[in-house]
Amino acid sequence: MLDKRYYEKGVGEEKGVEGGADFVLDPLLQERSAEGCDIGSELNVLEEEFPSLDFSSLPDAWTSKEGAYAVDDEAVESRARTVREGLRERVAKLEKDQGERRDVVVVTHGVFMKFLSGDKGIDLPKAGWKTFEIGEDEKGRVVLVPI
Image (cartoon, rainbow, N blue to C red; front, side, top):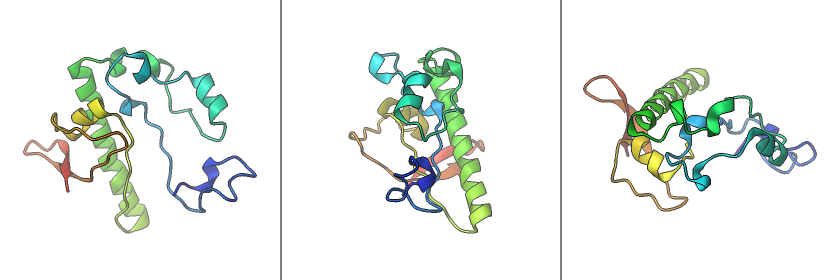
C-alpha cells in the first residue's frame, strides 16, 4: 500500500499507511507510440488532478516523443536499458537500507514492456502482470529474468 504522504491532508488518515510504498514517477516508462492515447498529460493538468504528488522529476520535453522519448527502436531500447539499470540500483539500495529483499512494482505499457522485458512476444492483458528478477546477460548487461 502507498505511503499516506501521497494523499491530500484530511484524506490521508484513511488512505495509505505510515512507512508505505514509495511512488516514483518515471517518464521513461511511457508507451512507445506517438498516438494521442499514448502521450502523457501536460504538467499543469497532472498537478491539478493530483495535487499531492510531486511531478518535479518530469522534464519539460517528456511528452514530445523526441530524443529519449522518440518512438524508434533505438530510442525505446535505450529507455528500456536505462530503466533496467535504474531498477537494479533501486533494488540494491532497498536491500542495503532495509536489510531484506524488497519488491518494486513497475507500471508501464504493453509495447514498452516488450522492450523492458526483452521479450518481444510478451502480451500481457490490460492490468496484467508478470514477475521478474534482475539479472545479467553474458555481456554483463542488466536483464529482467522471468520467475
